[in-house]
Image (cartoon, rainbow, N blue to C red; front, top):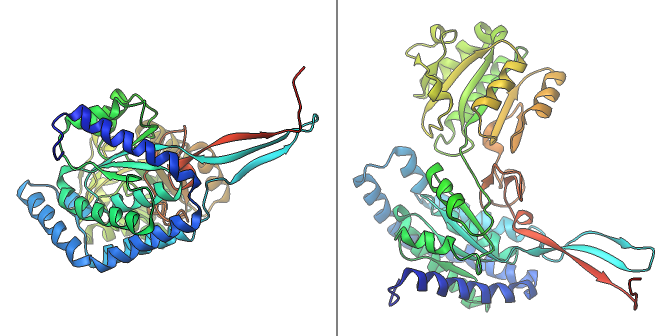
Length: 422
């Protein structure tokens, strides 16, 4: 916190600076914001070696601290991931600027012209864990949508985040944007979090992205609205009509492609009539990839090396190569299980039945419902948002991947020719 010794004063300083920047950002046109994004992408590539060096410090500390392999994978920055991050920033450039977009409009009988247009949320406090790439995603989305952002990453990614923050600041100066439009909290003191959450007078919305305990704390202490992202207890349901190869491919991808992320599958549900026909193929492929299978009594005999699942397993986001398995008697039973144990994040069905797919889409109330594809597609980049600031499991104000539009609200513009109300 440099020379500032008071956590309260530090939070106030960053909040006031962010508020001042937020008052300027709505008037900055899309071309200038895109120029900043392009500069960020260029600097990411130019400073790859510096970023990898900073990241190595965090990785070494993570190994020493005994972090899980999934957490270390989230933390890792490689040259390929840095290039992908730069590409994601450039994808945001290609998206329309949401600020000022006309949502609806028309004329009233008295001649008033009424329109509803998108405007920024204002000041965003974004608190997140582990993934340093989120620093860039969040800043890019906030600036493009006209918001100032205060970024508070986890202590495990401090060196990486400081290096990324330097890129963001240098790009702001280079393009002449408000220098406090993006600010990084440079202290890992947890007491600071509470100070920021208490500043509802300066911060318009808080977005937490991390473990359940973090999100629960934010929801408990925040004095401003919160866009929440709770557990990713995601399901794949194999319907009785499912194609064997399609089911195998989708389950393997949903669980194994990146097991430590929120849209990875945690539970596999299998219709009893598909058990003997489909499950041995799926189980075999999962086993060859080192997945620990935690099975119900009916699915256990078909999976070599599997262990029995507990009810608590079905409520757990493993974030690892562990998959719960349960046999259900019907589509309705699968939906009931998802309602009981799921987290309204991402749930998928594999089926050849149009009727079953439609019923699943209608009755499963999650932020993304997927038919015949991997759960891993519930992602901002994959859904055309360029990137995401998180995947909200809320119903208000945003749901699913939060991109540019989800970082705006709206206001009414009313234009008249002298009308008065009688």
